[in-house]
Amino acid sequence: MPLVKHRKVVMLGYPNVGKTSLALNFLRGEFSSRYDPTFEDNWNKRLVIGEEEFDLDIVDTAGQGEFSMIPHSYVFGIHGYIVVYSVGCDKSFIIATVLHKYLEELRGKCRMPIVLVANKCDLPEQSRTVPYEEGKKLADSWGAAFMEVSAKNPEHTKQIFVKIIHEIDRVERSFSDEKKCGFM
Image 1: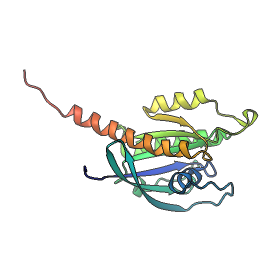
Image 2 (image 1 turned 60 degrees about the horizontal axis):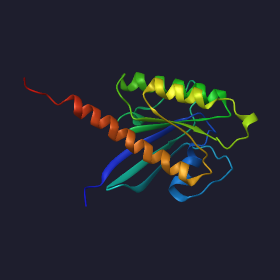
Image 3 (image 1 turned 60 degrees about the vertical axis):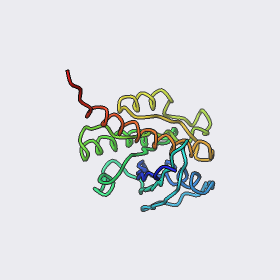
């Protein structure tokens, strides 16, 4: 059996977009409609994807507003980011763009493994304020993966974490491919 790979990811987003609900559904198969603000929670889960095994550390952060600072602990030693907004909240979508800008300022304009997650896709159509196309366009501008999900759906929540593992591997491979040299 190959070695277990360690991955640490941070979940960022405006308050009440469902970061904790996404994490808890993935970790425990639980969904609670009760909102309980998070200060910071850290969880760990072993995840097998194909032939590989991952020890996944998940940092679930307090909701960030436009003036929230991202601490350095969310930058150093982090392999990837899950940026979450709600399809029913324009402000959460705007904050997602601000968070990405802060990450670029802290990390530099390097390739960052990111999954942009549009949560609450199960809301009635009349409650939707952020169209799918806007989320996809934003993710594409970042070079990030994009998913529309519902925290109530365990398959959706699992796919978020599988996707961030794939994004981390994709970015790591792109760096190792650049370092290869050839002789003429």
